[in-house]
Length: 625
Image (cartoon, rainbow, N blue to C red):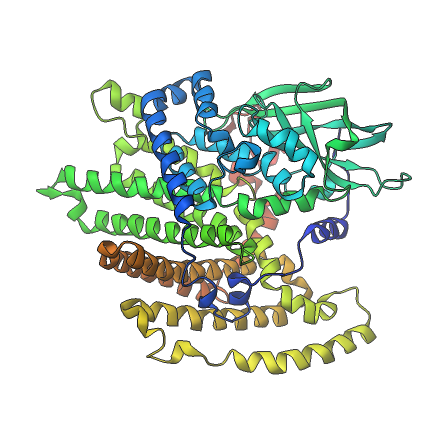
């Protein structure tokens, strides 16, 4: 079924309606983008529950033993498949139910320990972490936990916690990040619905026992609200057909499907939540579900630190270990600093998720965005450090008698994280929408080109009153007081930087709204930099908070934690300063004009002299077009 055609305005309205606009709990990220550095919201970090720690450590020990004794990562990579005995073993040790509460037959791990498990598994082989993450972070368990009724939970949570693999079906061949165009239809019939459509890139879809499927209920049918809705669908239902198993650059063991639904009947009690709540359910599920990907990135970054350290000491060039050469030392410092910063950000967000005292939608989104981007750079630098051995497969290394270090495989596997569960570009827009939320609430009518002049005049008056009070607050703060945050010793300067940076960021956001007005939403490069600056500021604050926590929980590591936090903070500050500069000094307009020329065919002659292996044949030159 083809995707529905909708206008840009309709698409925005659908996305906006699904967005959780209310802020019932405080948010460090929201306050930061408004220029209010609320370090008290993330420090001191909530203490870990001793019972949760004991349970989590016990499971990690079981998981380590299982991986070491029963899972050959080279076999998964060679066969592009996770063996049945491995999946059965994961079921046996309870790995499918890590996030399911004990009352429903799961392990009931905290978010902190769920992330530790994913980091552990993801380093052993990323396909294993992808299987478990897709099953629990966005599969059936999380939507049911948040929106399911008690009957649904009683029936399905014990199953997905033990032996039923689940998947999430949203994306379609013609629909990616624009759900308003969803083409799968759920037609109301007696006793339930009939589903028709095709779903693409369903991770676990080939082997799933049950899926969550998003489909659009037509509007205008009596007794039905209509709209995008979420349904529980056992895959052995008549009309469900896996058309193909997709193959990718990396993640060679995942069971990713194209799934076709043809007159598939689902009963009325298979509806999760209410009609029309499907997209909201999907977005809410991702709020904490997004912490799974940065957990995997943390694991890989810590592993990269180990591999880089070992190779930097073992490999000798020009009379000394390569790690002592400045070019390699710079990369090692970046890798280690990034590993600490990513772990800090993840730990801060995860403890907040467990504590449930903060709204972490921005923090989780930043962790996904920042983790996938920085984690990719980490593994790219590790490839460079390892040289030819970084490009050679682990199987090839093993065949000629060397240690099978899978840097090449991890390089391929990590690349998808910049696209999975919201691409970097979409994450920029999602976070930017939250970052300018207060501004839109105050000045939305002024920025809306469809608003009449009289309405704009009224809004302008109200906006002027707000900004007359708000802007002066951004002029000065604790960041200019050399004694502020002194209790953090050598790290205090970084907190003062974040305090100054958050106010500067809020001012720049305001200036951008004034300069671009209604066109701001189309200045995606500008908004991306605004978001990335906020990500760096959050990461610096998290690194300081985490270092302090390590000092209290593990006093023997205090000095080393301070050193790593200082290393990372200096790196992050340099990136933030560059981004601040590039807000107004960049090549955005020239790039946009160049892209327009490319798309129009103006530079077709540039493509002369090559052949397209996808089957288009030789390019004979622009004169032949």
